[in-house]
Length: 293
View (cartoon, rainbow, N blue to C red):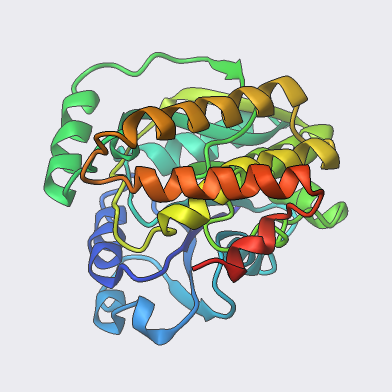
């Protein structure tokens, strides 16, 4: 079994450099790392020097789904693919625990870990603060055991390669750019071929970096159009999707009066309303965000 670690990234070369060197702390190193970018400006070639693991940069179209799919094309049937965001920090035994989980549980197809701190819910963490939060969590023993999960969390999810290759399963490239909810769609399709689980032994911190993210209007449109698309596709339960849409719409409406400095609430609300209008006119689709300013 090889552990192939893949990081899709865009516009964060400095942060990527720090994350790559942090991966070198792992008690069990990945067999190789794939950096999936849309241009040479996304990675500092100097950061790839002296890494204790092989590293390959692949270039192509920009977008979370398409960039992840480029990594899947490099897999063999016995591999495990560990997909990380470029702002996710792993506990030192994360890779070791991932390999153990997939070796001990052949019925598992997707595994996601426990995010001990998630900066996406606030202004985000600087790299040093993320490491400090990770050290605090590492001082406490990790509970064992697996629990069933509806989907893997895109910032840290591991997938067994065999069902992907045998059934031609890929991330949906109809979800462009940030590809919001692509992790749900992908997990539910892979769930037909094995368990989707959450492991308490896989611990990490999601920095939630705000640089390089999808603009507010586009993300707001995706918050409505993408769940509607997944309902029609049959990969997201209607009640779950509608609850998520309403929650985001309510949050954007409430906070647009006094927005948080790190969130474009008014842009998101505008995008929400545009998508609702398009749904009423039966013309909503995820890739409409490519036409929005």
